[in-house]
Length: 423
Image (cartoon, rainbow, N blue to C red; front, top):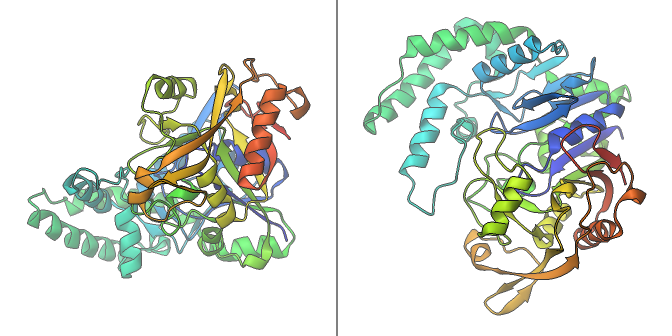
């Protein structure tokens, strides 16, 4: 069973890009299986910092095929620009494959995304990145989407693109919004299509050939489990399945091939955008945590909301994903604290619950129940092994593992590739 899956277990931004980069030392293929360029995976190698949005994080390991799977929605212009930037920085992109079954995002989707968010009432805004992700997935569900295969046939692509843009223009005009210039938009799309066409493949076949050959395949998730369209804090979620189940459908892999599930989580909790966040710290300490962790979105630059580690939500996430091994990131951000809090239960209408409520309204009013642990008050940034961690840091991590019912296998104590070790 040569397939491993790596997913975020919180609300995204857990450090998946870095962990994928680390795990690819023993990997023969990396597959992105959902989302779009609303993701931002940061990898720091030496003095170089890279932020990837669509290209899998295995791109920095020469010769490893990097698959953009069928479960994604892909902005062809953004992908072209991302690939061109990598080339300028000396990165070989020849191993990239773009699924012929992925769905495409155009400017009309981004305009519709912006329009919908602007029209939403306060308290009902999702906090979308306005990258057109939701409208593109909606077109896919409506069976009116345009797929990657059409990038190889400009005549068909143009016909479908014009038809789709005219549909959106009609909606824009009815809403009093300026229509898109179809000729201008098509010229941009045509350039991207011509650039990307050689990379378009039946990636389901590519992935399954690798599996049949006994290759080690690593599936890379985007966003986090708590943003999953089915299992997240609906409706404040993304538009795809961010869980391990989404890896099977989004890459075309049978479940029987899955060997191990890696879950990535921060040593505390963050969230970008709207929606419930039980352990959020709306005070100076929350702001100090944001600054210490440099908690600003890699895609949008928005400040992330910060809070204590939420074991209730994380346990639920590990259960749904079937997490075998945990990778804990940003432990070093907590180095200077005298005391740490872990949310072990919620109080709901006077009752203590240890299961995560299903509806956002209830989750929004829960009171976190904390247990406290002593901090370690010493730097972990140069630590290279579990044994070298301060005792209180090991105790904190052990408690997290106990509460979420998964084993800690990797610890990260800084943003760079070298600041990571096996537990």
